[in-house]
Every structure is written in C-alpha cells, then in structure tokens.
Amino acid sequence: MMPRVGLDLDTILQAAAELVDAEGLDTLTLATLAQKLGIRSPSLYNHVNGLPGLRHELTLHGLNRLGAVMRGAVQDMKRDEAIRALAHAYLEFARKHPGLYVLTQRVMDRADLQIQQAAGSIASIPIEVLREYGLDNELSIHLVRGLRSLMHGFASIEQQGGFGMPIDLNVSFQLMVDTFLAGIHAHTSK
Image (tube, rainbow, N blue to C red):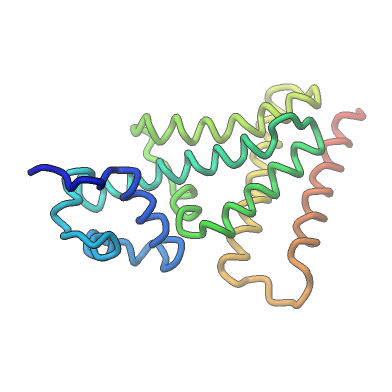
C-alpha cells in the first residue's frame, strides 16, 4: 500500500503531539489520530508499527524537542545564567507540551538505543553547564540528579494541580532555582 501523498512521519508526529498536549496521553489511539489527520487508521501503518510504534516515535520526538529547547536556552550562557535559563526552558516545555512532557519522563527501555541516545543527549546539557563550576564528575552527577528532580517535581506537581495556594508559581520556581544555585556556590567555595 502506498503512503498518502503529503502524509509523512513528521506530519503524523506533529498531529499526535498536538493531540496528547490538548487531550492527554490516554486519548492517543490510532483511530483518534487518523480522525485528526482526516485519514483512515490503516494508513498510519505505512509510517508507524501500530500504537506501540507510534508511542515510541512520539517519545523520541518529545525527547528531541525537549533537548533542542534546553540546548537552545543555554547557548552562549555560563554558570548561574545558564542554570536559570535551562530550568525555565524545561518548565516552559512542560507547560506548553504537557502530553509530550509525560512521554519524556517515562521509564526508558534500556535496550532501546534511540531512546537512550536522546535521553543521554538531554542529560549531557546540565552536565556541560555544571562543568563551568569546576566540580568533579561525581558531584556534577549528583547535582544533575538534584536539578532534574527539582524541575520535574515542580512541573509534575503543577501539571497535576497540586499547587493550590494563590501565590505566583513563577516566583516559587525562581526561589527554588536560586536555592539550588546557592547550594552549588556552597560546594564551590569549600
């Protein structure tokens, strides 16, 4: 069967991303995606290997987009400025793309080299930024884990509506990042 003219994997992934961002990951089926694209479900099989294949490609798409956003945010920045830009870009991605964000946080299949490579590319960004502080490799890994936990924890709680008090969330996030930076400075001044 020939693929529909104009229908390619990028078009499919863009439509799937829009669907999961607007309606949630649980709404993603081949039927709902086909309806959004104005095609019949079997046409999708020319591009993805069923729903598992679509989810795999969409996860890869989300990881690559998150990585590009993070890398773009820290370009030409150093140290504190880069950490702040990285954290804000991460949170903004989670806010703009809640469905894709959920996919980027799923436990990764260690045997899936494409996913592992994309996830590794994301992990390398804060590691590169932290190198500017002159920290040893092990401490840098601990700090990357801490930064990721802060960013993901905040984004996840916010997505689930867990911050109920009517106080500016952006100020809370900035205070959290500033506190993290104070911790880095405490380690570098020893």
